[in-house]
Amino acid sequence: MPLDEASVAGIAQTLADREQYARSIGLWNIRHAIEEGRVAPDFLAAIFPIVAGMLNQEGPEVDVAGCLVLLDRDRAIPILLSPECLCLDNPQLEKVIDALNSAHCPIPHSVLRPLMEQLEPLTGQYPRDSQYAAAVVAYGLNPDPDTESKLRSLLESPIHHVAESAAWALVEMNGLGSLWWDICTIVEQRAFDSLSEPQQRYYAVNSCHFDINNGGLRQCFSNSSGDRYDLAIDGLRAMNAPERVEILEAARTVFGPEGPPQERGVRRSIVFNFSSQQKEFLSGLDDRYYASKENVEMRLSVYAVDHKEAFIRP
Image (cartoon, rainbow, N blue to C red; front, side, top):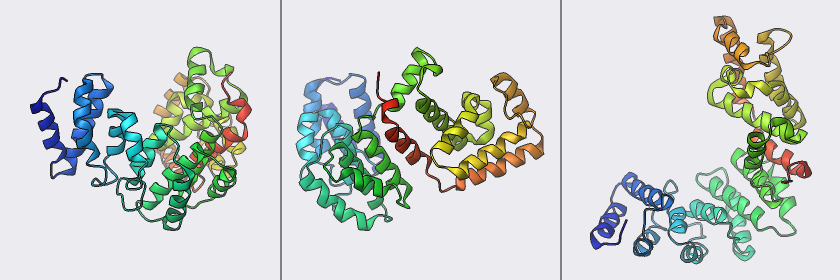
């Protein structure tokens, strides 16, 4: 995309549209063009101030800050670290913190700690809980002597998003931010058996949890996650999630006393031919699983941190 006045004017007009949806699409198009390498540097430089002008105007649904970092990281970071951006009055506060976290740019403690103190009593109110959760992750990326104790205290937060973010902040703090990518790479390039036992449990729980949330227990049994269903139960037990263990153990009885067959094709055939009574039984267990207060995402992260040596890259 070469630089010309017409194209810059067109982008500026889209980003100034009265409809938030149009502005959001405009930013998405810019990001997409950058990621595909279709934008010339002079065009990026011309668009930058237009996007920067949106930072304190848009709602939390529009990621202006992330787009700004893609346009020019070096120019964007000082702007995002400014008091005007890192304040409760900025509707883009969550996206600003997320962009700084993604860029692995530490927020100074002199700014971050007071911001967290302002946000913490407001958690439970939209969008303060999400803003606080983003700040918690930032704290993990730039820790001080008080960070671990603070993060561990937040694991008990009744707000799932805050508890999950505190756990993920512990992951980042311990240098395990790429743990899922590392696990999947080992499975793809070597074999599942090459994983350590804690990694195997993590993989099994994460895979089953994703499939159950996406399409219920029948989807889990039909997909590859069902190959390691019993290992997922063991993992949830190790992660102190007794209610979810009980639900999964009840579900496996639909196959009889031996539980789900290891062979996926055999298992799929059985699932396909479930009776209406069996489907209803599993549907009831789905509802119980969805209603459970046991935070699996938080437990996965804490489990990885507590077994750090088994997750560090070889």
